[in-house]
Image (cartoon, rainbow, N blue to C red; front, top):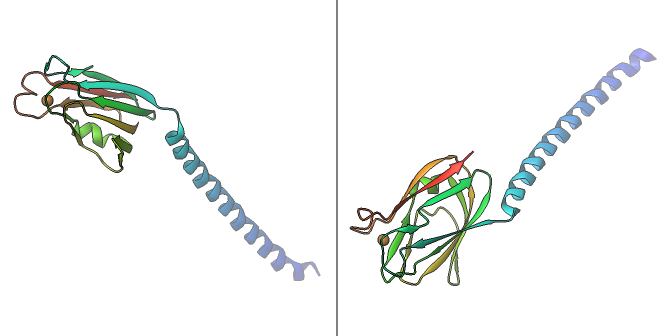
Length: 157
Ligand SMILES: [Cu+2]
């Protein structure tokens, strides 16, 4: 009688083990998904950067930005000068995840490496800092980088 039941018991054990495995895998991926959606839902820290100023000085104000990996930021860019400027930070752009850039009534999603701000323009860049490092910032309009329109962005671990 017992020897007749043994294969059935063994089969039940196998099924049970497989079920356990699936439960474990599902819990893990659900946790990872929850973690990343939590990162994107956390409140933003706001950083305002002016490209130039009303005296048309060629500089970023401030020119030193400090971010922390894993935190979400709203980078508020504005250009109070009468000149056109760029916010160019290519390596920084590779070290973050852009949630969106909002300018006027337009929302841009995807990888952003450079923003051009015409006189009086404003833009909001919502991003997640990811890769720790020191990144260069500059305005590549001829003469502007040379005149000191540069900066540094640090993402600390
Ligand atoms: Cu410039």
